Amino acid sequence: MAARTRLQIKALVHSNTGRTKETLENSKCDSALKVAIQNHAFWETITDTYTDFAITESDTSVSISSTSPEHVITATIVETSGSRNAPLILKNRVWWAKKVINASDNHQGWPRYGMYINNTMYFDRPVMSGLSLRVRVSTTQTFTDDTTTCPIGALDIFVEEFVTAEVFLALGQMDSYYAWRRKALGGKYDADGTIGGSLLKAINFDKFGLGEELEMEPPSRFDDARFGISILNNITGHERYGFTDWWF
Image (cartoon, rainbow, N blue to C red; front, side, top):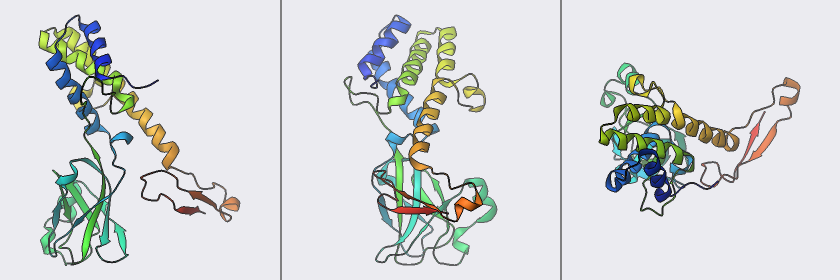
């Protein structure tokens, strides 16, 4: 079944609430998408191409704000005028505070670890000359107008429920607000961030689709493993598109 348009979603909201609040509904449709994307990088939000950012020698960070990223999906350090490259392993703030502390105190070279915060990629050391950061990101999606289908097909039910809750909140009908918010996000989301409801269903659906395309199990028996299998990657936009990978 095709994803619903914003007009169709709003018609369901009107049916759920018995009220029409066009301006609020339009705004909250986009808010629903943003909430969902902040919690999961849906396949439709991931860019098809990579973007390179030249890194100034001795710098410990580079801005990637021009891509308007919500999540960094892959990060690779590449030679700007060469052929060598290596994955940049992304870490969180807790790891960074324990292991890196002050990146500028480390030896200049080829960075191995990175940390992405607020449109900036930080490196674990001052970067040597001639290197660039290559990233693939996910971006926030919005509805252009009422004819726009939900940019993330699996989320149209979540958007309906989320917006319905927000309309009830605006009307001051708190029991209905909490009931619809639980349907959209689950009962624990506001307490501890645990995702549930229709958002969790959409995320699981998206993960299942990604798993079918991106994962491959190697042979489990040792006798079979010595022969190996080869996989031709035909996923458009994937970093290994067109390559044949061997599993042993």
